[in-house]
Amino acid sequence: MANHSPKQMFILGLTQEGRTFRPSDWAERLAGVMAQFRPGGAKSLGGHIAYSPWCVPTVVDGVKCVVVHSDLRESEPMAWDFCLSFAKDNTLQITEGCLLPDAPKA
Image (cartoon, rainbow, N blue to C red):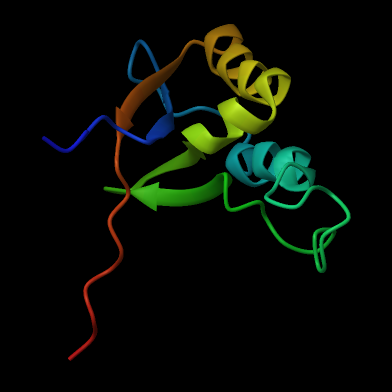
């Protein structure tokens, strides 16, 4: 039987009380700090100008969030802990899941 455990953690831009987290660019800032943690390490080509595929800012149902892939935990446990601590310290909602690609445009 295949293992279907979630591979991604979503840090939502909503506090536990349901308020929108500020500043409005928090997701881009967090992902920017995490950009160096990527497959191949910080010295991989273009690593200084792109988000890591393991920590990506996005919007889900109109809510800013950061999607953190479990591969980050395996490769850089301290970076994973930093993301979790950021969410906890700011009382942000966290959920596990799987980000699906956008549907093709017709």
